[in-house]
Length: 280
Image (cartoon, rainbow, N blue to C red; front, side, top):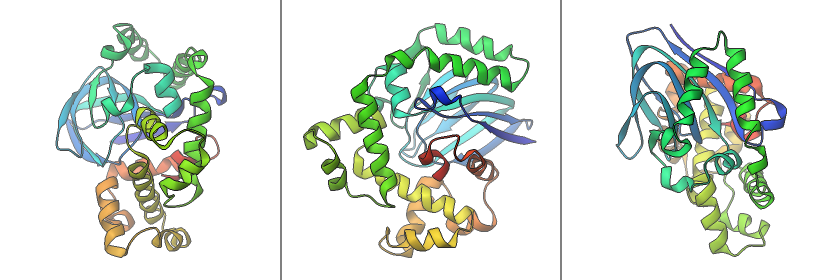
């Protein structure tokens, strides 16, 4: 059995975290791909594995781990039985919790104690002792509430601007982002890299491909038609989807990987999680 369940964060912390999830695998071994994503904080409650990135490097997965933003589809190879509770760190959440540049962790996975000290491992034991997932999500809400005072107004304003730009059209030009900001172009580029882990142009490319992948998986022909003009041609769209989603449009329609099918369930939380999360 392979199970991936999603849960919406409490309303007051949704500026920091995208979604909570509990991933469970009963097989002694399970390997698959997962789409390019934002940074993640993951607590391996049982089992271990390896996590591979688009640059070909892989990292051990065990205990409490911090996964940086990914520039392409990821792969994993797990040794089970396996249980993992995790959540996506939105740029504001990344800034409030880590005070580090996301660009330094792009396509990397490191033991969480390197950033959060050994205190994070106490939280791992708390999660392992939880009787059910509702206790885990209650703990996670409290974890993020403690970080709320760390949100700087200028970071909040900047990330809202970038998210609005990313949501404005399928392939928003970087010039449109610059027009929204009163900062210099150099400052905008530097801050996007620091908070999102990659340059604005690449960020827009990533979200364009993930939107197309979701539209294919949902057989949303109207959205696909609107997205076509965002790519050079059909071949370009196929290549981009394969790179960022880890599979082809055909497989998304008829033979999507087991994990990808489970990831698609995030759409059921639409309205209770960030729009960019439910759209990709």
